[in-house]
Length: 176
Image (cartoon, rainbow, N blue to C red; front, side):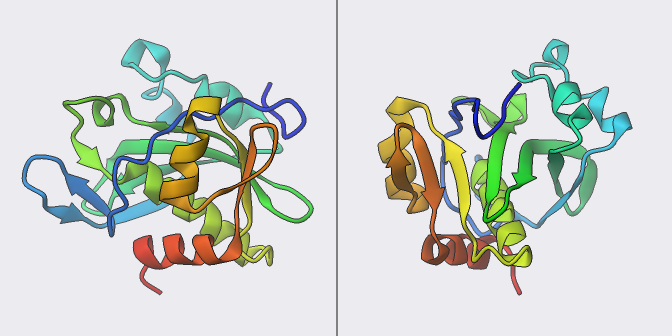
């Protein structure tokens, strides 16, 4: 089980920071929404359907909140998922996953992972944590997260997104 003390190393790649999500073929941007995942949603986000993580397990862990990213004009199709918890002074990202059709060279949309990270930052601001979001990175992605997200390495593989970087992400993805 992933906890801040026993973390899962995250390995999402930020393909592009967009103002929403962007169609990889047409370049058209689409407005997104973030909602809590439902039991009905869990039937679609299975390994059998190409998802890597056990989202049913995340959903069943009462300490975590699992959110789904959808397009405003297509709220049934999940673009990506995020599992977070509220810690005493920050938000912790346990898992983040793009939908299978948003991975690889033939992905449908850019910007899904960035959108979900921005949501975690927004929750941190709402909770009074000044945007601070922590996560544990795979070693080979530490520099990627520094450059693209403005994340800072704390110790080992634990990274944090500080206030200024969090504010930029929230402004980019969520029009206030």
